[in-house]
Image 1 (cartoon, one colour):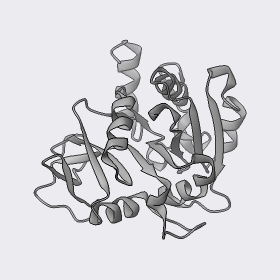
Image 2: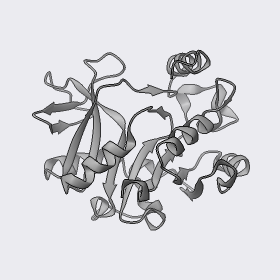
Image 3: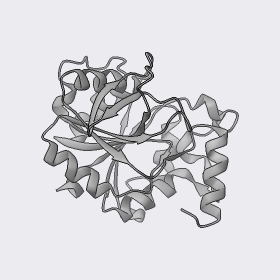
Image 4: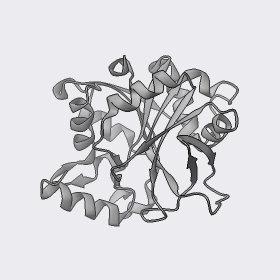
Length: 236
């Protein structure tokens, strides 16, 4: 069942684009519409039946533990996986968290706000029989640089560095993976999740699920201000 999948939330980065706000607090605690961003994410996940959350944390992660604890007062279960003395990157953080994640799990970026049907994504992943899934959005360079060639319901190419004219879609910010997707990658080392996704794509083991609703994020001051206004106005 999709609802048995835990959600790995990637929240270990330095959030340099949000400075000076994030000089003293981690990104998850940045205020959006009167409360920490993580509160909005938790509410959204719980609404979708996702109540097992593993936070991959690093920079100032102790502040999140202090404020949210085990998640009981939110009606969810929160566990924490700390990077350790050095940041391990998005893939390395997930690899370190694998013992807490089990065989299959969602991966959500710590600055993404995605008011979508998570059940539909999880069900599609299970039917695909593949090791990974990437949600994509037909972006045409509007919200960030497009990095995915998606055609005929398949991800043909994913590359964040070498762009092609056929890239009209972008990684939407939600993925689903089997633990086996990370086989062969080093433990306790810096690994970018994009490298894992590119390898899966090359092996035709990366399912693609196209989203029609745009994504929202607080990774930049512009994104933060926009989401703050939308939530305050009750439009999301």
